Length: 185
Image (cartoon, rainbow, N blue to C red; front, side, top):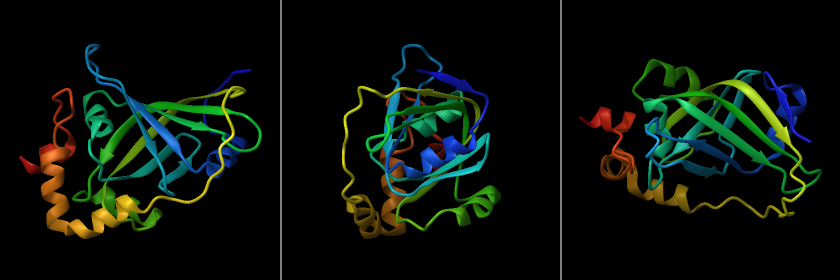
């Protein structure tokens, strides 16, 4: 059944690289705030070391993870085998946001394929990896990536994306100002 590891081992990295979707969980420090779980598609996750991962975050309708990284940094990544042998894997750690205006962005962005709408990179230091059976997870077959978000972002252009982010991504649903909200203020 479940096993706990101190870091990402080679078999974990191989499993992660086979997944077409992953989920990111975060929550504000305030116990009354909302827990957020976001699905992520496309090839946006990178493993830099057994304890360091990052993903290229694309513009979306909210920005809860970014707000929570600023608030307390707690982050969980979940990977689920929908094909092949059953397994669920979670990476637990502390995250931070890297914005395009920073020197660190220039160091990191080359690790990712260019995607329209890239708004930030979420980096995380992993302190625990937990696997569990996944025996009740159904099989699903991958067809293809959706291109709707990329097409929308390309149509917005730089100015349109900036305006959208200030309207929709500057403050979380719990009123936490995100790093994008700090840039615009």
